[in-house]
Length: 329
Ligand code: IKT
Image: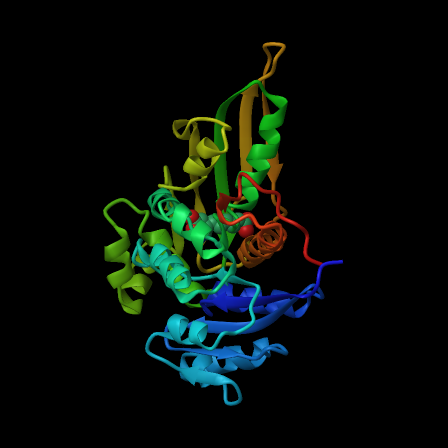
């Protein structure tokens, strides 16, 4: 049996906090480190997720946890200097700016730390940056699995599995429905979503004040309708040999004022069978599952898969379309 996996979380916003809550009910993993933009906290015997959330809501950072928090200017670097015995990190960070995740990967590479990194990155161009780091990750003894959230992630893996019935994949259509009770619970994720809207960019969305985000959401009735998104499912399915990236499309609706999903999240994989028939497999997520469950669950599942790869000496970069996530009990 695999030893308990010691996990670190980078980012303690909506997704980071959800991952910590999820870890609290897992037996095979333990949360030993967390960092956000203003500080870090670690304890080899385990961190208290609820107390960290309290530090964030009261003082704006896990670095203000009264027992184990440390405020810091460069928290990731400072955390890594503590030589925390973490087997892997979930990078639950917003990729704002679009080069941020690659810069975090470089920080790990130069730190001398060896282990597993998983991200829930979304944009094709962000994955392209990470792929250039493959030789450095390999030399550093890091196993990096990219695109491990809901999409890319769970739905990309489902598409790769569905493709097996076909001799040619004609299209992969990913459509998501996300419902959240209030946008402030996912400030960065919502900005990343806004960046996909016509007339916006990552930089413009990142620079928006909370008041500007609220004004935009007032104009749209709280809905963000996203079409033809720049989404890494395309490059990941292409690299995994499933189909050309031009055959992959991603879009959906985010309701920022209602926890109910506005539509059922699904991936439709259309292909031709060896008998010459055209057919579609559809994989639909349960409407009661939240974005947090569908992002953090797969991220931890891929982290477990990455740990197995790392223990076998496989270092470098892989994607959610190339590996099966392992269930974390
Ligand atoms: C994105 O960020 O690109 C899309 C994200 C989609 C999450 C899908 C979750 C599906 C589900 O829970 O049913 C999100 C809108 N940011």
